Each structure stands twice: as structure tokens, then as C-alpha cells.
Length: 335
Image (tube, rainbow, N blue to C red; front, side, top):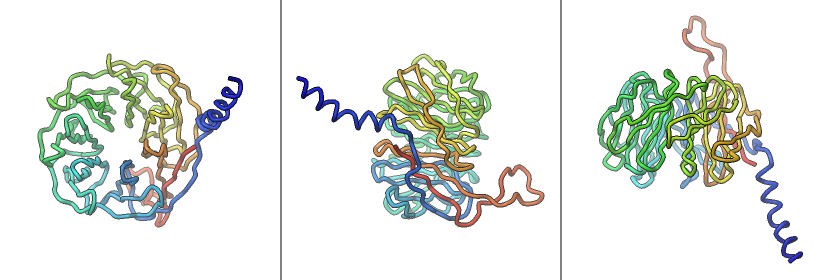
């Protein structure tokens, strides 16, 4: 029995050490290309990343950091939803109020569905087999049949949506950034069924979900992450994160929650229990690295960043100048 106990310790110790070790940047890939960026969406089955870049979506191989293709042209690219069972991807085209449909193999655009003003984030709900775009300025969600590639309806949300998540049980959730709320959508009925406040978490933008414990993670521009119990519709705890967040993720195996922040940090929060959490790390990344993607199959976090030139004279509403040529890069983060 003593030898068996020693053997167990020998086998378990490396796993425990790995779980307790800090995250670090293990690779940096220079992707280049012009234009600002938005959501970073992994495709775990193919180990690819879909990265929105204003007039296109870049498709990058996770292992090599090579650009394998682009979905173009898109007029105001923001989000991407990947639907392997349909062999399709869906990308929001915010400037012309539409959703572009493309073939996952060839990356060729095969169709277009009308959406609404400021079509931004977009997700797939496997239970209903529907795609939901979140249209910020229109305060709505466009519902699309992912298999048929056809518009179903537009759902009024009562506020400006940012990112969302599917619970996999026919319910879809979205953050409302201007009203500080989470809204619940019945995916099959295409209607809002509940809403609740994220206070004291203000301006909730990015979202991640833990379906096992039925918890939502809303990362807020006020430098706080709110954890909600979506069974009852209320915030159960909040934690500090970096400033300028725009990305979030949850790894169910490591039980780590991530928030990527424009201040050049990646906040890592560990889930002790469904309602107990602690900040375990604030990893230095790069300035403006506020968008991230998490591949749950490899447990890697992908963050993008770039360097910027001066803001053009007379420019209004611009906090940063243009992306400097050749500086757009992909950071690969893991333990």
C-alpha cells in the first residue's frame, strides 16, 4: 500500500504542478495586414482562428500561425460564428447591416442575410440550430436558420447588445452594455424571457459561460467581472479585472476564467466552487490586446495586438491612430 501511495503521488504531482503554474506567452506570430480588428473566434475541430479585420476575416492556423485564407469582402467585419454541421460560417458585416455566409472549406462567400444596424457579435446555438447576431445600435438580435441559411426574425432586446453565449439548452444570453443587464432569449421561440442587472459591474461587454454549473461571466468596462447564476437570474459575486476589457473565456477543464484587457493584461480567475472565485494572475500581454479566443481542446488562449501611428489631425471619435504596417500579431498563451 505504501508503494502504491508513492506511485500515485509521482503520477499526480506533475499534473498538480501544471494546474498551479502561471500562464505565459509561449509564441508570438506576426500576422501583419492593414486595419483594426475585433473578435477572435477559434474553430476547435480544425484548430483555426477567425479574426475580424474591418473588410475581411483572417483565417489563421493555430499551430503554425500561418494565414490559410480570408473571407472577403466584408464591409465592417466584427464577429464570426462557426457551424461545422452545416459546413458554413457566418460573419457580421456591420456597415451594410448584414450577415455574410461562407463555406468553411473554401472560405468563399455563398450568401448574405439582412440583419440590422451595427451588426456586431454573432454566435451559434446548437439546440435550436440558429445563429444570433447582436446588433448594437439597433438594440436587437437577428435570428438565422443556420442549416437553411435563411432569416427567421429580429428580436428586440431593449438595450445595446455586445457579446453573448449559448447555454446549449435552448437559451441564449447577451450583455446589454448601456443598461448594465444580461438578457435571456428563448432560442426556439425567438423572444426575450428574462433580464437581470449586472450591477455593480457596469458596461458589460464580453461574455463566457460555464454550462455545468450554470454560471455566466460578464466582463465589464468598469474593471469588474460579474458571475451570474443564470438559473435564478442574479449576480452572485464580482471580481476585479483589467481596464478596457473586450474578450472573455472559460475553460471547464482548468476551471479558469479569462478576461483580455486593453491595458495590456490578461486577467486569470480560478473557479474554486460555483460561487467562489479568486484572481490568480494578471499576465502582461501587449497594449490594446483586448480581444481573445480560447480553444477548449488545447486550453490555449489567443490574444491579438498591434502598434499604432499618430491619430490623424482633425479626426473625431478616434482614440488611436492607424495600425502600423506589419505590426499586427498573435500571442499564444498557455501553461
